[in-house]
Length: 348
Image (cartoon, rainbow, N blue to C red; front, side, top):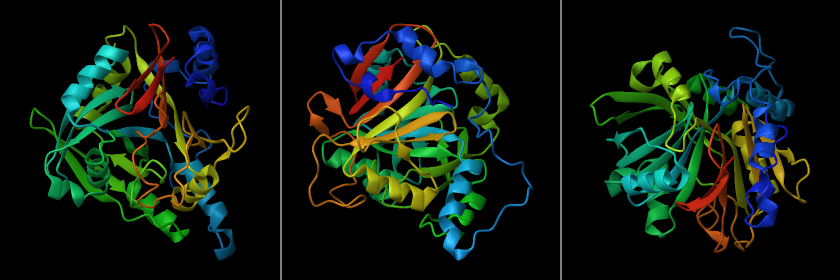
């Protein structure tokens, strides 16, 4: 678990954000089982075995039940969805600036979107574009991407948490009072014609100040077989090493209200972030730290999830500070802090 990760100072440019890369790696990598080379899917160590009897919450104990769900079932960040005008151009920019190679991608034929994927172990960055506006508008992820691109604010529009039984988990959350929908199938057609499939559960509308969606990948095939996952774990990116996402920080209006929506929808409960400023909140999901911090400039009159408050995290409190920040741990290369595609990336 990443209890020693302190993302906030690292995401600030200038003297406070120029600490030793080795020191940051010691803080983060020391809590990884197996470090960046580990091939196992993220897991929660206190999760009960399959088939074990679960405690059923009485109506007055739904909050406990949602918290139990999060501890048992959520595996960590699955992927980050970043809306861009041209995924191929964005992928080239990511490789040039951060040394991270996009090795996957394809088209969502039923959702009107296409993408390039940067795999970082079993977690990945999805650079998503729109090729059919009507299809995209009818899909929760496509609608979020379309809204961001139409507004001229590319950036992080939503993200996903991995599960290993999306249908059962969505049903369990709904029984505890969550507004999340049923898990529905999805697929992407790769350039080689192979299909990659999954199930997802949403609580629309999606946004960076809204809870993420849940995803369960179909095992096997060209991307989720044991062989494909082992190859990803061993992949050397152009910067000269392997890489993994270790944390996500989101600057939002009213972090406490956003955290409450997370708890209600997916059972994830934030706590005051250790060593952080007033109002900053953090939760550990699998091997990943998720942090909510106050936006530098409030959007007065907007509620979390409203049209005004549910846009992409590509807005800036100032020209130099994107509202979505991603920590990536590498096994080689120098410490980098790069603003790209409406997101701040810190390579540790």
